[in-house]
Image 1: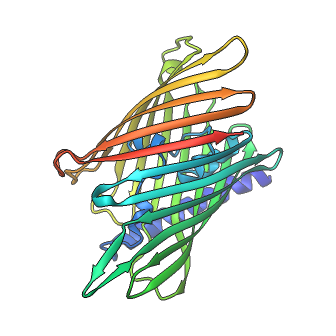
Image 2: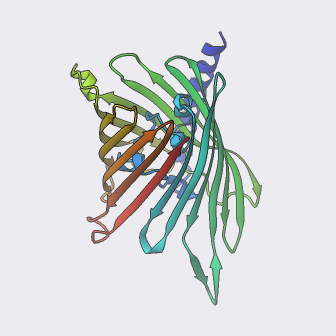
Image 3: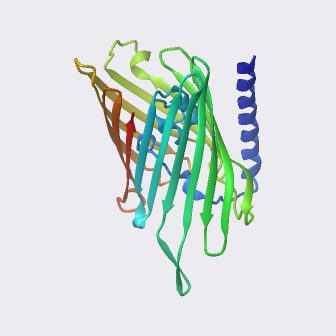
Length: 322
């Protein structure tokens, strides 16, 4: 009974969040804390930022905490994002599984836009988010998770510190590896210090992951080809709903002594009806694991050639499993 109560609770919260977004969209023309909308992981960035249905990494705290429930062992990860005009984004975190309890995670996201000149002085702007998360199984194929965030934004005129939280669900349907997942991001609680100048960039995402090889009933154990699609309903978009879509091909090779070597190719796009700067993304990933210790390296390049003279964003993520 407790399991079904939890499922019902998360579903109710998701519905309430969706209704809240619809109400806010009538009164908010923009939001603050825009750095929360930027990708913080090379794998999901390469997939057009579709990732609510992905598992297998402690970095799930960054896109759907329910995905933490399927993690084994421990993982430390680091991400570096090189934006335009020397703007940088740094992410670091660690996640660990506690048998029969679930997986806990901690992450820090720091957005560095460098010094800004105000009138006759140069001022530093500080923007970061510190998150703690938990993901646990309800039954074998269903998981839930939640993330609590402390979000900081410091400008010369004011400083804001806000608590917010994310919710996530994950459902492995049992039909040829198809997954349905949902995430609700940046539900705010209350401000600390100065009142909020703008609202948080909230978003509700419904995601589907399709194992295309399994759907075609092919028996290719070393190969995996996934289609991931997220439908987004943000509170600050004139387009309303929009779609993230990505493809990921992975080849895994296991040596005679049990070492694991993997290679991934990824591509994706964010599709918004009124946008003319939707970037195309390409990414690669490599994985090596031996004696329970693993290394994962992912790289993504985002192209804005239709808008910024072929300016590119580079994202590099490194993770250690131990």
